[in-house]
Image (tube, rainbow, N blue to C red; front, side, top):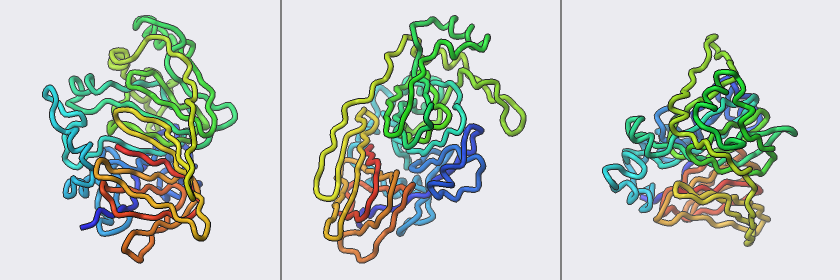
Length: 342
């Protein structure tokens, strides 16, 4: 059987800080208001993705990968070999090492921090920690995000600031604009600010420790829980340098341009711009080392498969899972993608 790519359908999240842009602009058609996040490529039980085309249509991505683990590629499969009693990515069992989301922050997210893999293994029943990357799709004129602390502080100082409602005075706020990218290493105190629309690529984890949530009430009239002890146990309390946008170099070939956005031990992310004319074709294929994911962040077009007369139309917001060692495909249209490799 050929390793043929397929579209995914996401799960949605109605967190209180979300807006309506994912339905309005990305045609997600998810009956949630607000719609804060869509988990586009996910095998996490808190928000699985579903196959939306091809022979596996209607199945969860987890179910497909359980029955076809070779879709993950040799790099991912080999990384499940236990080291010091733990595997790099946890239990195989149909799980991807990464999770990909769209996030619409109409208002500020909570001030939070994520644990490292080691802390999560030891204190969260062997789960993964969470290092993540943000690619900003759009941002309001005065949008900001929180990235680390202004100066070095001890845990008691931070704890006192939380109790007195003055934590924001300790935090570094960074302006945000469209096309920015940010790498958020586990242990970094952070928050996405109001008016920011972004794509997030992260480890396959849903562990978040809230330090402060502006005393907001959820839809049931309750304050969301804080996790101050856990947060302070994992947070980097040293002052952070203001994140600078990295030098990015577009490399061109007929019909397309590429640039590396981020490379870390968990994932690689490229931006791919496709602009084909009538006779131009952009060929695309994964190798046997890793699966790939194409997340369309703008435009539309048609994907054709080698030795197959059927086409697959794609639009802004669509997510295509490309198994390792996939059949060759060609992309026609005008579109922008995040090309993500595990």
